[in-house]
Amino acid sequence: MDVSLSGQVIVVTGSTQGLGEAIARLAADSGAAGIVVTGRDAARGQAVAGSLPCPAHFVRADLADPAGPPAILAAALARFGRIDGLVNAAALTDRSTMLTGDVAHWNRMFSVNARAPYFLMQGAIADMLGRRAPGAIVNILSVNIHCGAPELAVYSATKGALATLTKNAANAHLRDRIRVN
Image: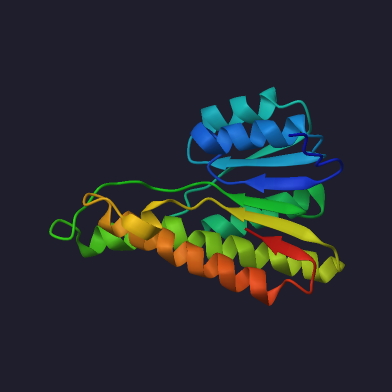
């Protein structure tokens, strides 16, 4: 399937490795005008950004830190002037069961897998609305929202929360021409 992102500026979280990196590469190969690569590993992030066939900017950010999403959004707007698309691919998959999860684990998992995507969506949507421009947001979910594996109790809950946020944002901004999947 051919996808054209001609002229679009796309922010991809977790794009220093794995699925996020693959998404950033596909977006660049699909004609994106700019890609914002994000992650915690500066060397890896610079390498990914430098290897993309379009203008790219790396933002080192830890999504567990509440300052991470605003830093990503500010860097994207400073470098490219707009955000046309956002892919929330970053996630923690640390293991815990109903018996082994603790408050620290719960808080870290929710901060990265639900809180950060919410504030990234909020900033991207604000930019799109401010420009009266259409846009697209993709949140990477998991089958575990339906049937969580025993060792993924907290992870499953975070992805369930993100699924609910995705549906809410999609319905709230449908008339604004902002697609959220």
